Length: 191
Image 1: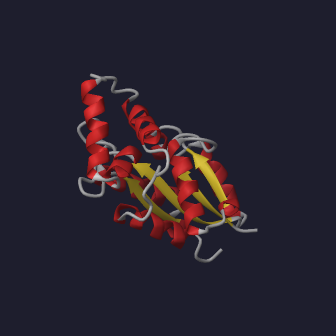
Image 2: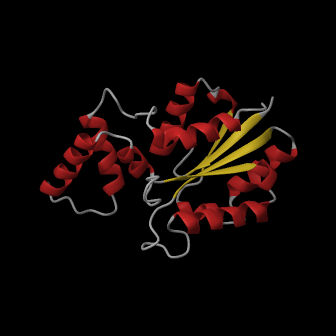
């Protein structure tokens, strides 16, 4: 049986990135059972040539059990990380590591961010796809609560959104999800 591989931040079992990908694949009618998920942990691990996930993935490729790979990585912000932060730096570093690993012919990249600003992470993509009044409501709450913890900001933002709008966790029909949907469909094209 042939699989596709998706490498993403966090762990392979239950993270916001993994959950969103699974929900979107379900929405698209794609067989999640044909996906090998690789949770890379933090973003910097994507750029470690000797990462254990790459060794495992190489075994799957060599045995022809995996024939396509999608790297899903947050853009983050260049001001926070001059080497890997920001869309262009992330893209360039991913292209380099994919080439060094010898995965070029199997791989595609999706950089998670607000498509307009090309900065951010999963929560930025989600916020870019919700109605303005919902976005303003979340921003207002964060401002008036005087919540300042940078370490947990993304998690808090995501939880506020889920709690505030439980019946519509993600607007997959929004144009900002089109590129990711296309890449997921392409991933499953020949398996």
